[in-house]
Length: 240
Ligand code: 1GP
Image: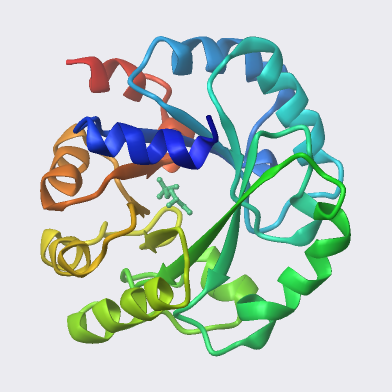
């Protein structure tokens, strides 16, 4: 079964999905075995790998290493075409729908095709929306695009909905890595109400309470990166 089919099935069974995001730029390969041991023993259902600024060969090395220690699906969440490797299981083919910068709406995607044509990677079309979070995040800097105003909920909903009409398989609502404030329940609820496709929520989630709130508001999958980077003890906190 494909990873996307698995996601749909989990949602049908009322299971909540949880992705740990590992940024190759901020992670030491030597820590892989220990970190993945913690991941395996946690509620994690998916491992996401990607970052805004990653050196060319770091992603493939990290993905290979991760795969040695887990059977969980490894999904690329790339900041750039150079982060695509068929050592992973799937690729979130992200279009930055909140942006008006054509590079991240379509250009990078055309560039990626030569890498994908003969690859076994499962490609999952994903509408990616960056929402303003109180600080200028790496996504904003790298993509040179403005996030959507978090007060403008109707515009956020309409953007997600446009992604659905365009045929995206997933919507990823993003406050940005290390965001000061995660997305509010109000935003998540409003977007979820409009969607028939799965909703991923990430950015700035640092407590179990915030994660539970995101699920309660309608997130089908929650993504956490920074909280684990800052302190691996967060795996223990999640078990409580
Ligand atoms: C970033 O949504 C992910 O793209 C995760 O964000 O690093 O803030 O957990 P954090």
